Image 1 (cartoon, helix red, strand yellow):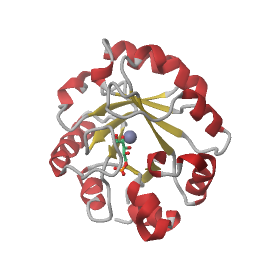
Image 2 (cartoon, protein in one colour; image 1 turned 90 degrees about the vertical axis):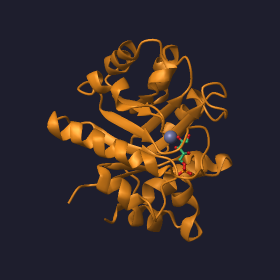
Image 3 (cartoon, helix red, strand yellow; image 1 turned 120 degrees about the horizontal axis):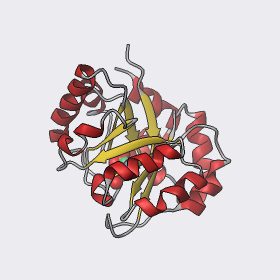
Image 4 (cartoon, helix red, strand yellow; image 1 turned 45 degrees about the horizontal axis):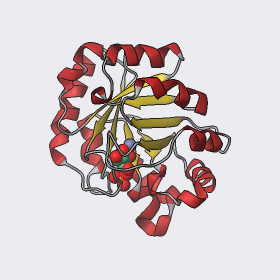
Length: 219
Ligand code: DX5
Ligand code: ZN
């Protein structure tokens, strides 16, 4: 059976307790920590940046899956490397030259992710798929946690997974936004192997993080 990884988004956690929240996620079995970085420009919301990520880094050993929703992203990549990011995911629309930005992340020996908004097609990254470690399929328009899952993205996951198999590539397929106990199976069946979840993990079952993470892995 396919191993499903869970990347909880700290966006849904208590921002006054982020260190503790991360410890709770690690204890609950999270495979990595999804960090949503928003600049109030590329997306209409502002969250956290390198100093906060750096301060959190010592609270856990599991990887930081850093989702950059900032523009222009290129000049800030090194700051997120220094802060302790393990996976750096960027949006093609946030850089003048996607190939340059991919190579820049690789130069630091970090994993490269590229994210596709619900209305961005696979064609934008098709020729780069052999250089990418992870494709982050957005199942909401980025900017806020707690939004409703857009079911139309399922066909994009299926198509991407088909390309992955045909070309014998190894990138991860991660899905982000509105994942809940009703829709997570359809995302996995379509070909995703990493699920991001904020609201479901922090709020369902009275905030029983371990129970919620375990549930999202069961197919
Ligand atoms: C949206 C973010 C997501 C989101 C996930 O811009 O990238 O990571 O916050 O949170 P939920 O699971 O609440 O949709
Ligand atoms: Zn995200």
